[in-house]
Image (cartoon, rainbow, N blue to C red; front, side):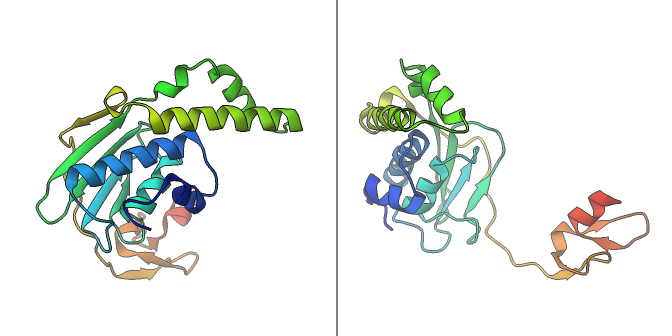
Length: 197
């Protein structure tokens, strides 16, 4: 697991090859090149992703940014935008990956096949062929034709912190103190229990 990992190694980590993973692979490679960093062992590199699609796995694998370490943050914007920061000096880069592959001749058929609940063997083969064509196109497409670099539009997230916890007054399970919900009664509740009341 290193910044120069091959696409095949990234596929092994993710579980399958797909256009989203290929986009994330290209983005992650650009990020480490632009910020002159190695794979993050701790929080040396921070990634803020604006989607929860397959490409985020490439960011995790190549860049070492993970939720558990606190150096991967998710903003649910549904955009192919990835912002990276070098923790040592605050330098960052915002990467927008234009989804050019959506407009190819295979698009309507690809959408039909990936949303169909059950595929015949012929359809499975067709989907695999379309996927392979799209992945290859993404991996070889000129970077300047779909990767747009700019300055970050957000602040670098603060380092990960460890918080105290307490028990939910309803279910009894432990809750991180920053997620405790206080109802009118003043009882400490976890989010699921607070939503039920």
